[in-house]
Length: 562
Image 1 (cartoon, rainbow, N blue to C red):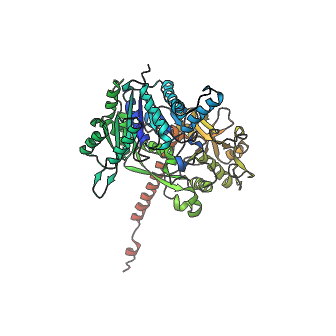
Image 2: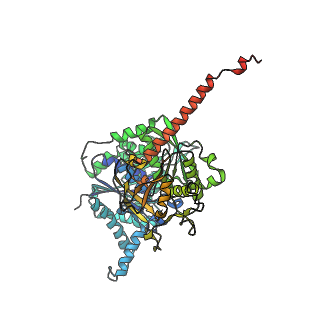
Image 3: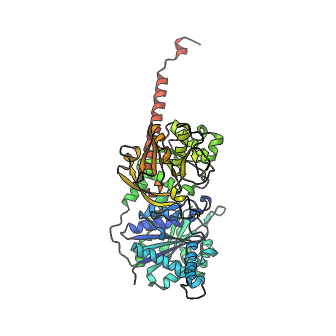
């Protein structure tokens, strides 16, 4: 009998209640006790993965080390628990149904009628158990996407209900995350939606053992007692979770609530080490006590939905914290740069980030942002497409190749400085076919990137089809662009940088995926450091200017003018 324990987390009342952050935070406080934790997201949608979905539909696509395109919540899991997730960590309805139907076509079911129960639920359970075995975890945390009551989520709820029957009673724990709405007219929190949500869950055969009550307002003891009574949950298992100033406060809030101790008691587990959250508390204190603010612009075409750039934003927070800075992010719609101008929208920024993306919309605005950063010496970090637009801008305005472009946007350009990778040219399927996952990169000694990483070779995660065209490499180098990161065979440009610039670096990979709150990524740290230097330099110049003005004699008074 396996000793793996399972925690199943469901959501109620409303979507986007914060299950992902909650599960990640629980993973963090359990890991702080020396336990090996693995986390999995069950997504009810029929897509095989979010790789072909618009960021407006699903936020960013988080790429794992082994090349899986996954839900953005997996980014939270990695950042909080600091353990790599894999393709086993994200299970979708599309994957489950595809696997079952492939088995049916092969005749694996010996002519049986294929049904949701038991075939679909068995496949879901197989994937849940597989993660625990593959990672040798003490505890597997499983987040069920969506909200209780969603029709597409029912097979997953049935599967986690069935899991309990194959485990010892205390080897499974069910946590329900709900929302407590606040009625302004009566100035009270209402528990009725939570009661209905728990009842809906119970109708599917699952009794919540812990209720985490998300809210924007303080929760009284009376409200806790009411939830405990009407939802049949221990009073100490009702955990109010008030909206925090920072997502990194959440593990500490849950730790202080006693949730981890309750979980350990439930599973009859003993900590394997002294609780180690001191470093996390110190990090959060740095975030809370930063006295200086750095302003960074993120120039993208999905900025109306900040989740589309979740890992980029968090990587900036990590780097700012490492330098005791508060971070102010300016979200800049790249399409507006052509209409309103860079001087209007980019003026006053300490640094600029142009993240990845696909499609032509907004690209010309990103090119203008790269030009503004280059000409005005504004620290710039380009990620994937952000590196490519940096190269296109350089070709147009420095190499004087007026129609320079990527063949993604203009197949007929005479100067295809960015071109489709050779091994991508015969691919027709869109999903899961890009250059995905971790690849090695050799750094040029003495370069900005080389100094930032301070190692000879790195491994970073990729998600792209287009690459820098080596036919133009010599021209770029002659005019002041250095290719400071190359694939080991030197065929692929992985990092480019402007030599005569305080910090203008582009990476073909996505460094944001490897940033951690207590271990900022070197490239983001380099950007923030350059941004601080720029801000402080501007401040020093302004102070000097004011001082010189004060020293000027009053000519009017000297002339005796009335």
